[in-house]
Image (cartoon, rainbow, N blue to C red; front, top):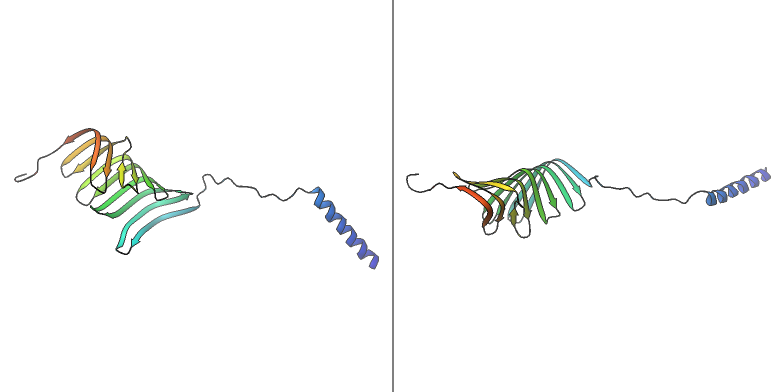
Amino acid sequence: MDLNIKHFIAILFLLTIAAIFSLKPHRIEVVDKKGIPQVQFIDFKSYEITPEGVEAWVKGESGKKFGEMMHIVQLMMKRRTEAGVEFAMAKEALLNNRHSIDLYENVRLERDDGWRFETSRLHYDISKKIYSTQGASFVAFYGKNVVQGKNLRYLAKSGKITAEKIRARIYETGVGH
């Protein structure tokens, strides 16, 4: 019986050595993650809370985070600014790591003083606080006044607005109107 155990251990040892030399070394396969989000949100709402209270909220039908970018579908955003409250909505949005937000399709930006504009594309530089349609056309409304144009730039901090190729219908306001 001792002879059989010694033969078994010797054969097992020889098979192990043969396996080490004949089998390929272990490899880790790298998976290409393009198109696969790191995190996905469904029907979400996010808040920016400071010591002064809720400064902003963002709501979306869905959100997918890809590295430094977050893609949001059916964005609605409301935030407090120095000039008052701003409300934005768009069919799609890309948030670039808190540097900028790009809004696409059926974009609408409103302020609580009655001013609003609509466009197909809007870029917001978060650090500079500048909105830009980046060459896209827009329609702006303030009361009964309507301004159409292209390449709108809105400096949110100062309230200054510039645009190109504008066409406006301005109604006089005052007593009796």
